[in-house]
Length: 278
Image (cartoon, rainbow, N blue to C red):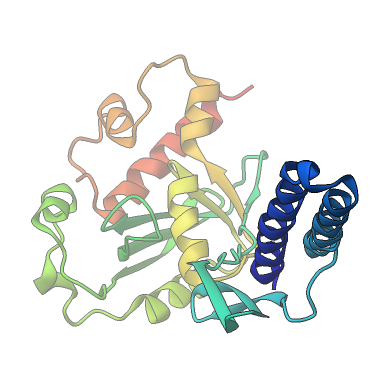
């Protein structure tokens, strides 16, 4: 519609302009006739100009559009539908839909400061460092009452996949050792039942507890003591890994990265901390 009105203005300008020009050049034939011709040209120009201006300020009833957004699968589509002098039209603009992030509440555990005489020392062996992409393959725990051992729990855990040679070199556990072992869904609840509500003791406890909470899926009632934190607080040693303490305490006869042996070393360190704490 806008184009047609522009054409009217163009045609009017041509014919009106010619009429005015003819009037100007015909003054020699008489003033009256010349003025009539000029007036005719002006009469042609004025309506044409008005029509062209209205096309810019008044929207055509034949040109309209609407916009809305819809989601198709994982894609967000902005749709524009309308109609002009050429007919109906639809324009679609595609972009990936925004994903809504759902963050699960972080599970935590309770840290104990008081050194207890009744407790359970535990250790996990895993296929990696993060519970989100690694699995538990061994659980070992020793229960103490009045600082004396009264019971043990041990279980290999069958992972969902293959144990890499890199992990086997670290903890000595391979596929043959876990092929008949229970899954984590069985072994972990059995360990928690063994521990009851006793205080848990572990070296670098945050590592083990992250795996426990991740695979258990909920918080547990136990308080936790970390011998790594306690050793740093009690002694002035630069290196405080469990293997460092195994050497300092003369426990070289015990293995490393074996859950029960690590529990025994951890307990000796715990008792050493208790003897040297103010």
